[in-house]
Image 1 (tube, rainbow, N blue to C red):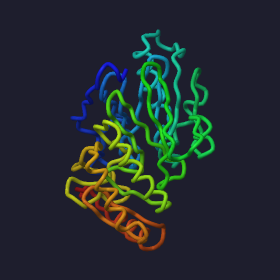
Image 2: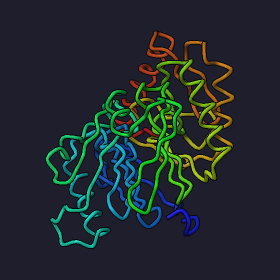
Image 3: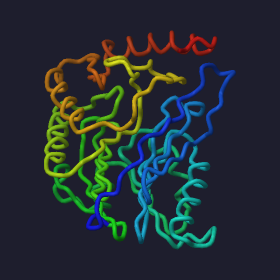
Length: 306
């Protein structure tokens, strides 16, 4: 597919972003947007889960890759994915001969909660979400730096490890569109750091990868920032009317890398224009996040969340 030229992405979309109070909920459970032929981005509603994760579906000639299953029961996602696969493969409804691989950007609960809905799906592989399972399935011999290919049929993706937020985090690059998916490792929001040294190496590797490839968009799994530089929504926010786009540039990625270099070994909360680093799990991180979350929830319950 890459030899046919770059396929442009339609990123000009207003994403569902929750309701101003629990009495005024209006979002559908899932928002489905076709970024390009064979490239679908799905967002779970903040009316279902404050995490509101993005789920990426990439479809090739022989099989599809679903990256993550979200933060809630996957029944609705399964139905949506089945419809998309039926349409793409031009098979009668219910014919599941077209294969599906369900993998994960990483193994945190808000990205794997829907797995059970796909376990019994015919012609479907659900990849485990620990390092051993990820290495075995994708064939890594030099984790995490090795870049391996994953062929969907006329669409070859590149996959490599990006630990730091989670030990089994992976990045997926689609040369046909220029989209680099970075999960919860880089996105416009709070980046919780599990291993600072690993994240330093990961961010260097991501920047170097972008220098070597024609990356057009960097996509993560959430949006938690507002459209004001350095200002995020509170943890647990159910209403985010002033979100930036989930798509970041390679320039922003480089700025994120440079910012983290300055604070990598300083536990606490560190705010920058596009991201907030939460380093460590001690009181300097937990107390401010939870205190602000309690105030924001109280305001939302009385309809004053904006």
